[in-house]
Length: 146
Image (cartoon, rainbow, N blue to C red; front, side):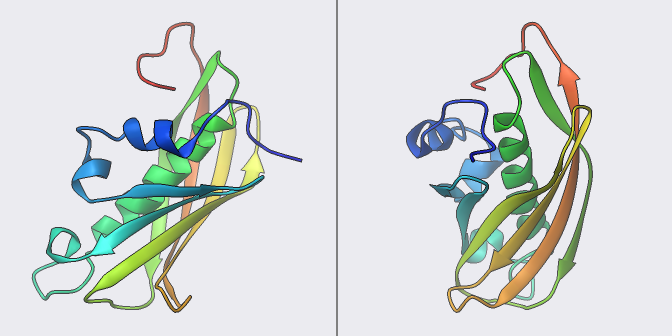
């Protein structure tokens, strides 16, 4: 059974990233399953830290982008989600390639949600694991595409 409460397609999700940090870092939403949302991000100079490796902050941007978008897609039209906390453990250094993040829910409550985001390299090795907590808010007129 699907967790999603809003209609979506990858094209519209990627269009929603126009002129945002998500677009700037080259993050592209790539897959929607019954209980997860996935995206890729390049490991290149745009996402490097000064030593030429994937910046931990870029990994956190990918994780929070996935967790926040997925959380909002699990809410009805009268609700929206905002981030409360994110933590990340950086496990493997990368200098090039592409990473894929997958967000899956741990808890989908009425007032909070908790998401796990695993970021892996092309070999399937874990690069970063994050946990993202969001607050569910009620709203009559939320600005934006969701």
